[in-house]
Image (cartoon, rainbow over all chains, first blue to last red; front, side):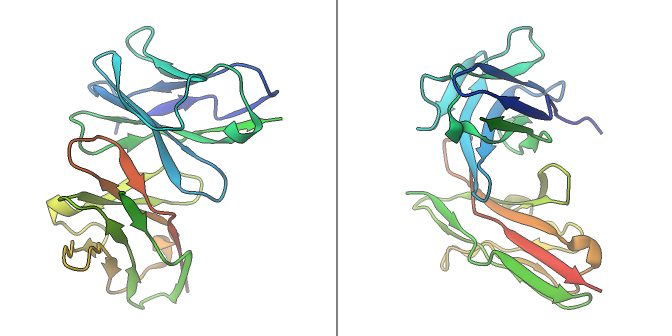
Length: 112
Length: 109
């Protein structure tokens, strides 16, 4: 069964550095999402992306965040200048028809 | 504001006992509701959604609009049901999922 994949599985970075988290969607999926889960807290929506543009974003998704699908396959989340509070598990999710979302295994980001 | 509440952080039962994981939501319209499960060291997986009205792995959930609840039930818990369970809401005209804080189910032998 096809699955969403994410790389890297873990990333440690220094505060102020840029990070790029990558997601490979299930092949026929057209809707893409990023969520995050700070340790001990709930899974929170960050952004949704369809037809090469952001369709919705949360208050968390400020100017430090961006998403793109640079090569038609990978879907990336970039954090320009990481802060300590960006430490979290970041989940990519994709769906075929904006209904059931299929989640990747997550990238654990630690900002020091 | 849209909100999902799972009042129990941890629910412990013995194998064969009935299980009910509670979920209440706050939303003025007609929501779509989901249960996601996360087994140890695995990804979030969809367990069931209310519009499909199906039973998966023996679990069922009924949407009660009067009580704004979507509790997850299973008559006889199995050890392999031990996992983190998240209730989630999808509001009308939006794609985002709003999650509850999750309930950890522990099923003892």
